[in-house]
Length: 411
Image (cartoon, rainbow, N blue to C red; front, side):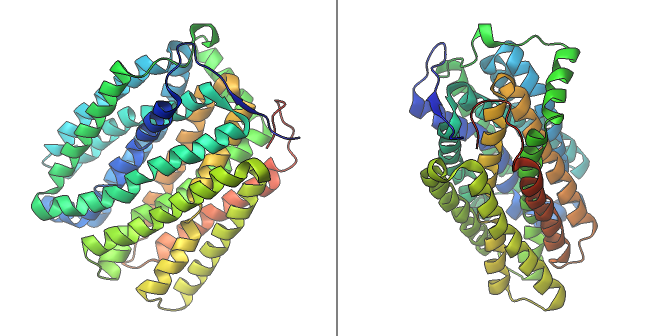
């Protein structure tokens, strides 16, 4: 069955271009908060006199906060609307970022990163829910890809900005920049964003209703398939993000500037994949695109892991195989969430929250495992990536394919 293309007008319409740019900025909170300070991992370790593994906890706890927060943000936005929840989240993110900049110990930084994530996750959940309020069908998949293309600028620019900041300042200044990002989105939410979730479509806020929504999603083979496909691919990506600083700067001896450039090349792959997805997903279909890109990424992860455990790989072949393994990650994320939201439009906030919680929850586990088994080389990173990609591949192949569709639109 061919998926229909629809664009629904919100009760008080916001300009379509503004919505795409605004939601891209909101979903950029996660990448910016993670990637901008990656080049400073070794510097933070030195300043606080703490092992590198402890600095990785500032990333893992951020992911935990992002996951936990989304479980509450989704239902709250379904009940009270996107705008008020978003404004509160931006305030919390800005305050926590400011306190991170003034932190003087690793324990305080870890705790503040958790709070920062609770605020920042509002952008991640609501960015997707806002688009689902306005778009559906393949139009949703296309705009998700375009949003992620714009969002790709955050992880592309963030590590480059972070490495430049370290040349003229300290890692504290990176968090001051995040304060500015939070305030900018807060002002946009207050003065320009108009509510997209009208009063008549809001659901009651009670534990039973929330659990009923979660049960409806978890009891669906199709929904679980999309959740696992996107979440485990995200876990593979965060295994890479968590391990990359130690591998490229510690193991291969790259400078922060060169590491940032390598990171940027991989993000450029994400952007290219998003462009191609937005152009062809309407013709090919969500599930077919997912099958293709998962085959590519999983094959790359298998080859990378096998060679790393067998031979010493130089930095160039390692980087090339790594690129193949992660180049289409944004395509997987965009089509997985589009497939999920298309089948549960009445629970867009809750479904988006579960998707985000799964992504960052499994991402936190993957990052923690990489740190726990880190031996100074790339083995723990590539092994975690391969395990996650295999689960993602199997979820798409055995759960989403042929599963019944609760709504008339299909992938």
